[in-house]
Image (tube, rainbow, N blue to C red; front, side):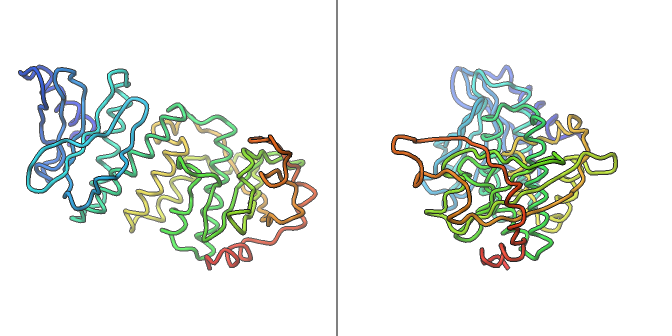
Amino acid sequence: MAKLIDEIQLAWSSIQSAQGTSGWSTVAVVPSRPGKFLAGRNFPDKCEALIAGFPSSTLPRNEKLPEGLGFQVTRLEIAQDGLTWLALTRSKDGNLELFSAMVSNVLEAVLALNTDDDSRDLRVFLGRIRAWQEFMRKGAVPLTAENEVGLVGELTFLEAMLKAGVSADIAVNSWVGPTADGIRDFALGFGAVEVKTTISSNGFVAKIGSLEQLDDANCKPIFLGAFRLALTETGQTLPDKVSEISELFDSDPVTKSAFQDRLLGAGYLLSHAHHYHRRFSFKEMVILEIDHDFPCMTHGNVKTGVISARYEINLEPFISRDVGLPFALKKLEMI
């Protein structure tokens, strides 16, 4: 059977020279879902699109639709069987190869649910597009060495939460760092956890990205999870870690899709896996509670006129204040 991306590209090719000066020309691309997913081109621009139909009741009129570099999502005014049609369309300056990969990935995410739940299909459809929106915003290129380490650390914390008894759906959906609105890495209950990771064997310097990141004025409690990894010959690569955790969600396609959304938003694309050769071994996890005497900069303690800042904290003197993951999760009311 041909790959889905090949079928979509073939469908676009078949309407490359369709007649007409304006309007949509479409071809069905999923025989098992007749009339619901269409490959299309909008003439005269002829830009490629994936068109999906969902019951109108599942999509509020005021729903903000995603829009990213190289693509846009629009509503189509088509009166048919009470459906609202959404067109995911390549922009004129959008890269066709990347857009094809995106369309294939979005459609695969919906089809993997294998249900007749239209509301769930729509949620996954838009969620995956928003993940691509964030991925493209970050440059659509492989992770830097520093960001690779950071992602391994966040995945290690996610895995630790699962082992501690946090349910899969709550754990994955709490991972908000890769989303556009994520101030901290994990939003748990009324609080949060910010994860910092080092591969240095000596010292631990944490980079803090904003005044808000460790500010507990409106989000409390906040914990800082400090992870120390080591480069070894027997450790796991980033793709190894991704695969290991992903397999935990095989029986829950919705959670698995949400996990894949977060990976994409974090800048991890499966086709980039061959770039990640380094092997990491876990060495140490320290959980620190952010309190009144923890050294951090916030809007409440900087001089008037300071509106943003990035800074570094030497965590080494505070390692002995480790409260442990079970304590943190209990205080966050996760277990």
